[in-house]
Length: 136
View 1 (cartoon, rainbow, N blue to C red):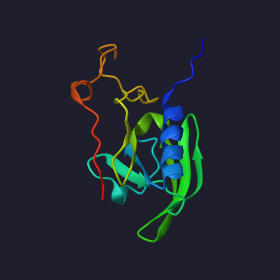
View 2: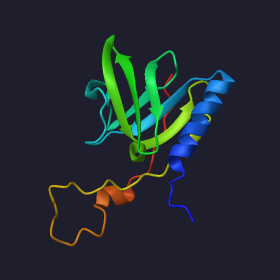
View 3: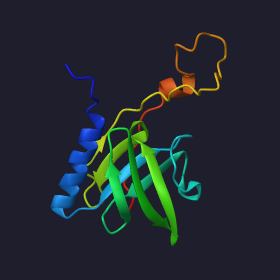
View 4: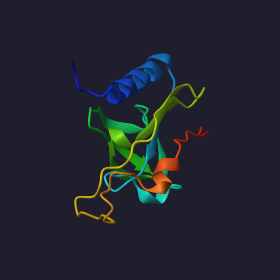
């Protein structure tokens, strides 16, 4: 039995479907400390990235992270998105795609703990629902 997660494969499948259909693939991302994106474009802890071939270069849809080079406001940026931070991938034109259930972020290596054992997610994470918005 395999321990490989399905999420990166599903992301690649929807990306390929968008490309084959002539649609624009958009990636919805929950930004955390491991996500490298221009923070000026992050709204309410999320960013939506256009992954079309016209918008990004050197796109790598890996099993652990998604990387590419893109321009924001005319300024080049290197983009690094952990697959765990992806909340959805969809076609801009019709909104079809996949939304992923939120994952609880890994604890920080600095050992930031409140002393209760850390087995239970914080209340704000336990109630959070993934959200997907269409950006036009």
